[in-house]
Each structure stands twice: as structure tokens, then as C-alpha cells.
Length: 360
Image (cartoon, rainbow, N blue to C red; front, side, top):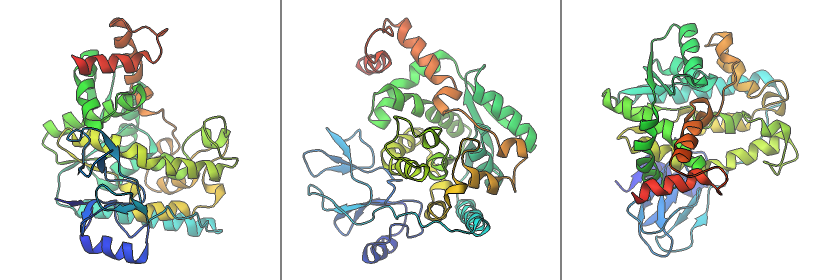
């Protein structure tokens, strides 16, 4: 397959209209002899840094770099951006904005339900994965170490929702085995990326073993709807001076982040499905007024308002930790690195440990 994500005619029409959100869940590949990748980079596409080879995975290339999101270009030539991320157009009426978001999420999840595949949901107990679990009515899987926040949160959320939860309790040996496989799949060895990808890969392995074809994830919700503390604090981690601007920064970070997550799941033989990143949901998110994004009291305010119509209040209002911390994967990977002689006094000791496992 030379084009993934949608049909060629849809991409041709998007090119002609320069429509950044043409109603897809992302696309990438070759169309009419040119490489294309959608505005949010939801489908990974890699090219040779100094050559004309390309692939959907970094491994087959000698020096792989990501093809720029929203761009078009013949292999081996300088790409041209044709699909910039649209500017926010806030809807002043809160109820109209919320109704549009609710409609978009229903449209996106219904498209997933209609697809011919056996699907499971990666479930952390947070509002993002809980809303997907409710909308898709698919089996739910949680992953983490036995004393982790994510497993505790997943269990209480599943109980509140009346759902059966399938749990994968990790051991340090699981990480040691999976680290080189994950690093090769995502084409990265830095500690943070590997820590984030590991839970996705490990839960994906379990889901694939159980006979499913695809794994649905809640990726994109924090970026689209103001889920990060830094977008409210406006600290050194963001350049923007407003919450709206900081949310915009986070959305722009997706083309770099998403290939990591998609490749981690694909390496298990599953299709990665992210309904909250469908074009309709992105468009609805860009129409939320500032008051429905985040403040010091509530993050993802508008998204939670929509989710509250389907979920128990304790689940719709719950905050959660980032997956690498909530699952305790970051803690345990750090411990493995130190046990292998890579002490914290060393610069980037976990990354050095990851690289050593690849060498072995």
C-alpha cells in the first residue's frame, strides 16, 4: 500500500481545496508520485535524510527523518507545506460549542464502530479512555506495575462504569525484554520517548495475543482540550503568554509525538486507532472558547462537560498522571538502569541504558 489512512480521491480534493481537515483520521504515503502527510501527522511517514527512499517505519531506512506534517513533495526533494493547522475560530456561545464537540466525538467513534475489525481500548481510568470505552463498547485493558496509580484508577473507573477490566500487571523483566524492541520500532532511544511508548507496546502485545486487530487510544485529548498543567501555569515549558496560545503549542507538537505512539502499537501487529484525533474532533476543539479549555481549577473543561453526559461524575472529573508515571514504567526503567551501573549522576543515564540494550 502506498497511501494509508484514506482514499486517493479524498487527498486529491484536499490538495485542490488546501483543506487541512478534510474529514479523515489522518493519511500519509505516495499519491500521484508525490509524498503526502496530513496536517497533524497522524500517520507516520519517514524519508531518508539524504536520499529519496521512504517508508512508514524508520527501521528500513539508514538515516530516517519524519516527513513534515501537512506537506507534499516528490521523494528526494524539498517538501512544500500545503495543509497548515487551521487557526482557532472560537464559538462565543458555550452550548453551541459543546454541542458541536459532542456531535464530532459521536461521529468519530461511530466511524470506528462501523469498521470491520476487532477492537480493544487502552484504559487508564482517565476521562479520555473512559469516554472511548463507553462510546465504542469494546473490551478494556489496563497496564502498569501492581502498585501503580493507573491500575488503581482503572479498577475504580471500571467498577463505576460497570465494566469488566482486563489487567496486565508488569514486572521489571517485561521492560528489560521490551526496551530494545520498542526503541527499534519508534526509531528513538531517548528516555522519555521510550518510557511513553513502553506501556502502549506492552498492552498492545497482550491485546494482540488475545486476538484483536486494533487498539483504540485516547491520544490527542490533552493537546486539543487543554489537559496539561503547563498550559495554565505558562511556565518555562511553553513559549505562549496565554492559555489559548499554550494549547496551540501543544497541538503543534502532535506531528512529532504521534509517530512514536503509532509505531509502538503497530510493532505489536495491531492497528492504532485514535478517534479523538479525527478531523471533525480537531475542528470542534479549535472552536471551543477560552473558558472551555483550562484554568487553575479544571483542565479540559469543555471535554469534561461533554463526557459527563456519558460517564459517572467521578470518572468525568478525574485527573490522571502521564502514562509513563501513572504506570510506574519511568520509575522501574530508572531502577533497571541504575542496577545495570548507569547511575543518576551520569548525564541522561536512562538513555544510555536503553542504548546499551540495543547494542547487546
